[in-house]
Image (cartoon, rainbow, N blue to C red):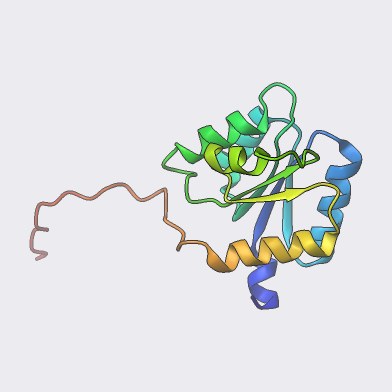
Length: 149
């Protein structure tokens, strides 16, 4: 991924701990990404629908709506299901990563993690993602178009 592709990529950081959120945001911006932030699952859904980020870093233990439910909702919405979601969690228990994948997370990173490792995971996910679908385009009729005069 070249520098101009990185600079165009928008990362939504969903984290309720302000210090951690600000640290991730600062390092991602330093690495050339555009960054948006959310503090809970409801805000994550709102910001995702508003901004359509290229990737989401989702803490799973969040207030108001946890990251598990926010991920499930985003992955069942036609407008957002294509967006890769990386689960960020302090829980390294067996089965947690599999549970995150079942909820719809595309990758799993255990906190604390080194910022370089997080950026490497973001780059990997963005390089492997499916082509972005334009959610604003309405389905077209199957009728043939009329002739122009």
